[in-house]
Image (cartoon, rainbow, N blue to C red):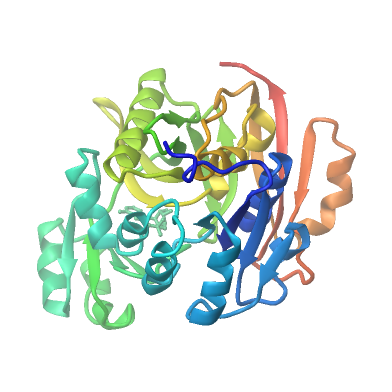
Length: 364
Ligand code: AMP
């Protein structure tokens, strides 16, 4: 690794996106002696409060991007929908980590599935859908059920339609906007789990323990670790996550979401999707591990070595969504709870306002 690729304390990391993930990345960078420059179009970005500098500009403002690139040693991002041309433009001037390829793969569900099956990890059956006719054929092929998902810009259940019987099929392609899509097999999963994995410039890979995730209204509500799965399943989950980051020559932290299926043969995992960034289901690492996912990401994109991802405590992370946050002072009275608030000026229904990590002695 050249010294150019490796940042020194005092250098600046550019972060695209100024939400809570950008904010917690900036906090970790500061604790490691690095500065951050946040680039975000929203003038009220919560990350601005904790960053040495910031730029308010649209992601296609070339002059603003050039000025930003001139002030930073590396660029990273806190959301996967960074426009391709923005990432490519910056990448000509300064290293973008994780790379542009990780964005291309995670922004398109079809490319993602093709990549994942090529990398040798298990995924649900899928078919490309570009018309109502394609959809009808695919549903028939999957025994009359499936989940129709737009290839691009789907998140938190948006751009998706669950098909459980033939009645939902007519008009379904129209209902998701008649845009390029995929149909996935309907997975009879017991629960959803995730793994946070990190990879350095020199290819060292380290993953965290598996979290069991619970969603409400399509939004993550809590993550529990340990996840209550067998040690073999933890091993398989980590191995799959590691195969994915190795296949992408990825640098930084990635969240890998999986379905856990339990049948007569035991536990089985299918990768659902990957997020090329720190992930909400990894917030538990802040208080249950020596090195949080945010520290780990900053270390990796700075060209530094990784910290330990070992877990020293059991933990339940609970998201404070919308007016849940009004209970913040009760959390302070719980000696086992650590409160994390994002400093958002306005509380809105469904908005992630903060989270709580509740810690207990390590059970296994
Ligand atoms: P996603 O946007 O892919 O994370 O999907 C949102 C939610 O829809 C997931 O958290 C699951 O609860 C459900 N879901 C997505 N894909 C499938 C599938 N193939 N089978 C069953 N449920 C699914």
